[in-house]
Image 1 (cartoon, rainbow, N blue to C red):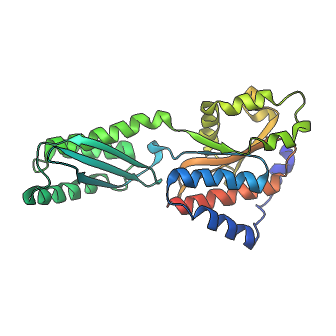
Image 2 (tube, one colour):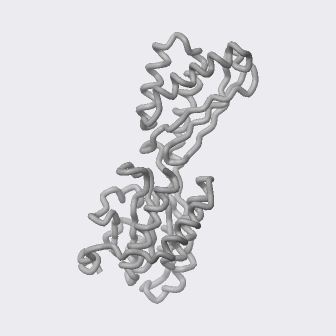
Image 3 (tube, one colour):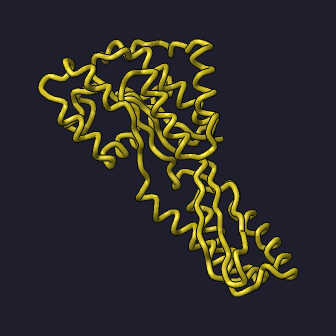
Length: 273
């Protein structure tokens, strides 16, 4: 299998109908959870394997916009929009009434300075830049920049909760004869999302086709050494913020599954752009 996969010179192009179906299905949603849920269901249907997708990593995402919305005289909502499509919201206490005319003008000015300091920066870099603004900018209320900093720090702390979603586990039963003993180790491994996250995160170095293929014992997880894992990163340009892939028996249609994973990853990147 490894020799066969290594000799695949190019990815088989998908038909016009398949490309149209992928585009229509993924572009029909504007919520990240819905997009990723549709992604794994689509990929599972195309390949008849277990499909898995990693939620976008905040540490590898850039900040696209920070919106500041006054909720009352003492509270303000901070909305952080990431380039990956993730949106983080926090309510922070403030000491200025931004609902007043003077407060609204001050908030507009502060919003511009905060976005200038964070736009298109990775989350960690945005934190550093915003910290500098907090220390040096006398025009912006300290509570405001402190609140935005806290929101970004909370988002970074929640990176540990990054998760995966999968679909098509029942497809394994259709290939039960390809597993020498039992499906139990495979199913146990699939239930451990930390394991799947580690596998998907390690995907970064795809081959020239942009796809990684791990076959049998090449998988570091004992319970998955009777399977093959095909993965590809998705994101914006060269910036991968997550990975998508399929898992199934080592006896699978590698050419077709590689093409499907590659195509879905590409369309997912376009949808989240």
